[in-house]
Amino acid sequence: WAGRGQLRVVFTPGGELLLSGDYGRFDGIPLTHAKPIAAKPGYSFDNPGSLWTVRTSHPTSGRNLQQGASAKLVVPLSATTTLTSLTAYRESDYRFFIDADATELTEQTSDVHDLQRQVSQELTLVRRTPKLTWIGGAFFFDDNNEAEVEIAVYQPRIQRRPFTTIGVNAWALFGQATYSVSRRMSLTGGVRYTKEQKDLDNTGGVYRLGTDILFDPATFYDYVETATYDA
Image (cartoon, rainbow, N blue to C red):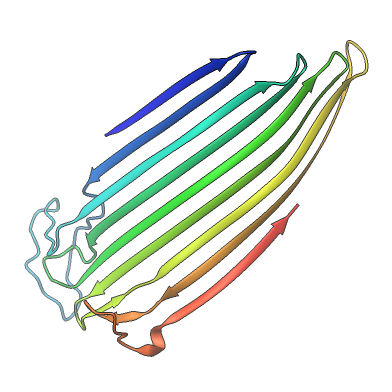
């Protein structure tokens, strides 16, 4: 089910606050089934005769949660100048469990959990006069993504567990002005500077199924990378 709401508050002299949010939760079976047509050499199973029949050894499940909220504040500082603040938050929580081999044989399963959160903030100052109109502002954005995956292989009873975290931090300053030269001509100029940093933390390994013991210590890895961009 899903829902969305909005609230508007007006205050004097001429200010306005707009609040909005949404929430959605969707449970069910993800469309991840595959129809096995023929067994690989050395394998055999009771393959269903119908192309529309799929057998699995583990029940498949899925959950998808999406929600967010925002607040927009508009404050007139004078008859010609307005300050605006826009704040937003968003979150995504998605998880599914599937029988990855899509047969009644106990071969392999995948458990995937993806979590994402982000927040943004923008401030702008606008001034409008008969000759000159300009806007100046700042923008900030922060994002975090986590992907936890567990892939179980029942022969030889191992589990691959990659876990990745990605973080993004960005900010910008910008401005633009328009000058009216005459009733039929105007000049516009603008500038913007943006800086962004991305951080990656990646760890994982192959473990003995159902334990925290590494199947092979050489399979463990853990590394961090960072990249910075500006323009």
